[in-house]
Image (cartoon, rainbow, N blue to C red):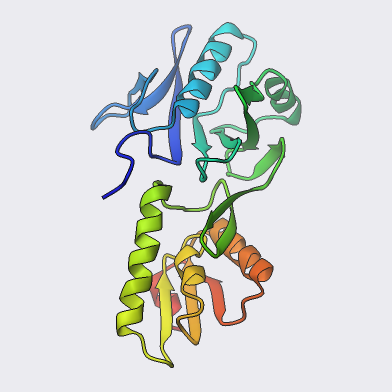
Length: 239
């Protein structure tokens, strides 16, 4: 079980809509597309909710900000890190001028934690970034960097348990010449964690950003027995 039953999520997506003159920022109601304002949530870190509440207040106080994001993704992979990442996803194209006007108003510091912003257009292409491209994640001898759009486990503490269990499981069943096929690998954390347990690892995912991050870590770690590839569907992995 997880050692932290509350405030454990390292990544959350909030949805935004305008109802009359009011900005609503929160989660979808159950079995519905309507959005409920969320001012407090027990499964997210307090700093996430603090940022969302400040953004809601800002958007409601700035009627001249006509183009607002449809979704806001917040992530902080390491509890001790002093930076959180926030991605603004727009359904409609937004100009660089509008982005810079919004960015100038956004909170940059929450207590002692800084906020890095990324703006993505309707095609999920980055149009503006305020700072770092990737966020650090480390556990024991593994250190990697992950961008906001890469798939990653949402509970970092539970991920530690998963990695330890996986290592124990592989140690019991693995042979000296064993090979590993890692499907839906995301940013490649399981392959990278088990790099010394297999002579060859092939890992695939359909998300290009995730594979880009995995290859970035591969280069940084100077590992030569892992191959990360993009596969749109399972049948491509068999080629």
